[in-house]
Image (cartoon, rainbow, N blue to C red; front, top):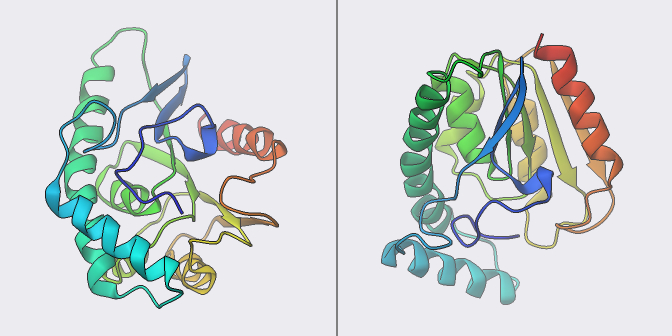
Amino acid sequence: MSPPGQHHDCADWWHSNRLKTLSPRSRTTIEFPWSGDRSRSAAAEEARADLRRALEAGEPVDDEIVDRLVLPLVEEAVPEWRATLDALLLLPEIGGPIGYAGGVISIGIRLAVVEPRISAALLFAGSFVPRNLFEEARQVTIPLQVLLQWDDEGNDRQMALELFDAFGTSEKTLHANMGGHTGVPEFEADDGNRFFARHLK
């Protein structure tokens, strides 16, 4: 698992946090809080270190560690994404509908609940999720496509399956592939594009 906040949005589309529109086609990425050139969070660094220690020791990851690491990231990132969307939609060449593709699934859950301008989301189930976000997942009603790497060494597969089950939308698809965290097959990019083509009309 790449702990949230450790890296910025990267070129691999399935790890990126992106807003996508089809009219006209455009994509936007923003950097995670506390990553890249942005200032660091001491609390997030401590939580990340605790997560690494638990994973390296083969111990269960305590919910308290996940909460300390992920919830502040969600609280920071979601308003930034909404402000980015506000600014983009002021541009005459940008229009809806809007799709979201995100590598930190907790951010995608919150955005799907609070941002009505997002019409569909492609999410990567490759990070730990705070338990209270499972309740928010039940409120998600937009179409979803979720990617899961079956052998992801730093992810809780059973938790990811329970989260998929919790999503409240009637239109959700799970793409599970063999391989580790960074082994998403290239054909998933085409599947993702087809997913957005269906729903961003």
